[in-house]
Length: 170
Image (cartoon, rainbow, N blue to C red; front, side, top):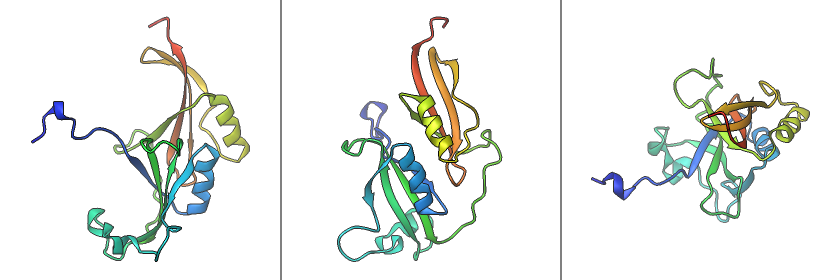
């Protein structure tokens, strides 16, 4: 058994976001700066389903599971950068059940750092997305930040944080 000193788990690789319309969701994530680093449908050689690759038992899905998927990154030239795994499941196909509240147990939101929360907010709003609020300046954990949230096309909450510096009041 590994000890805490060995750090056998040492970082994030990707966060998976399931979607109902791959192209619509890809357009949203490209709008906020993500780029495709690996498109699973456009690789050399014959296309294999996720089931044929062997992902069914790993993901507790049927052996014939299949999806349209791509890995996206905010830093496509950095092989160590965290990725977003965007997937539209072709089989099995499940209905979208929206989260009732951000207080529900389970993964609630994905937070992205930004250099200009106001510019990101304006870009999203002008593309027809509806942020919950304008960027709001708050003090949190000793830092001053501007922050707002918006949902992707399937209701995944994306939070944007612009770090403004240390809070002199804390």
